[in-house]
Length: 418
Image (cartoon, rainbow, N blue to C red; front, top):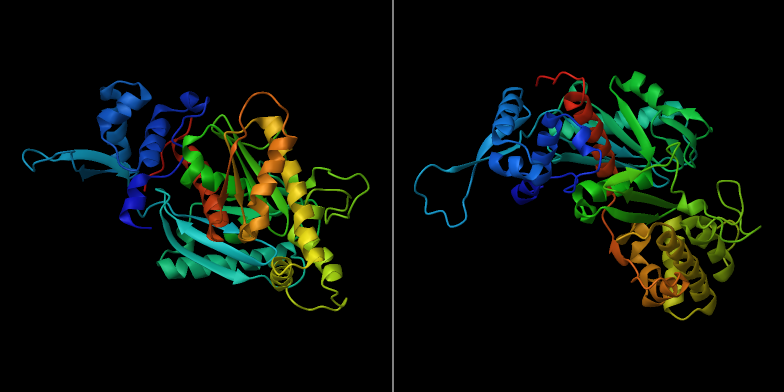
């Protein structure tokens, strides 16, 4: 990341309703991190506290190595007099790692407490579902590679955020089901923590893309927005009142398993008629074998088959075109239901599949509007964010940073020294 990106900061720019319940030192630190670089007087004004309180708290945060003072240019500064002083998060301390395990390849990023990404890595996924031991081997290998590239000791890491597809209890780290794991009800977080020797925080990968938008993207200035991810599966994350909403048991927002057809196509979750059984990669590949008259032993990758199907549709193959058209209609239905249920300010479509323009063609969005209930409101804005693969891992790093910040600066905790 360049210096300008660092100055912009990271984290939500809007305060959640419960933010006022946090210790003031945590509020001050998070506000500085969100703005990137800010004078003390502005922190006091934004948080509506006395300048003296901010001075006391920031002095403590500087002494313990969380913040540092930097010179800040004044608007219209002639260069005379004392330079303006601003605060920023001290870079290069309290490192965390974020990872995403997926159906195709695994990614990882290393970040410091300011949210700055220091190094990244990726590796292809081996065929077949993963055991807990295999997950441990993958995460350990990625950790060594990223830390080696950054010159950071793996033993100094303060936490790991991990994203996996499927049904995840984020509070306990229990993975109820994931298409990449060989067993259901896998107690993954404690097993990885023991192996890696650091806290491991696990969540559904769609939640982590949403967290990435909340921390680094368009969601920083929005109180209510949805992220719909379309890759080998279909996922959704939702921010409500500036906070990621997970549901009563941490496993809400499973848009991909919303039923759109009773007794319909078989979904990889084991049930029938789920949205992703008509929209996800594996669903289109299933249809492509018929549309393209492919043999049962077709050995090309999912990506190659999708590219072939898309090329056929563009060339005018009616069977191939109908597959995309039907998937687009089901997507319209899903987006209309999200709008009717939650009334978001923005819906972000994210994932590798965004390169297929049927997903956001004008017809698909028009049909979404016709399926919305008529209330007099306008349809939410729909944006396509075809971020690179590292966005998933970056969201996982944000999860680790969020937890680490609470541990070091939250209620009833003594601040950790550098």
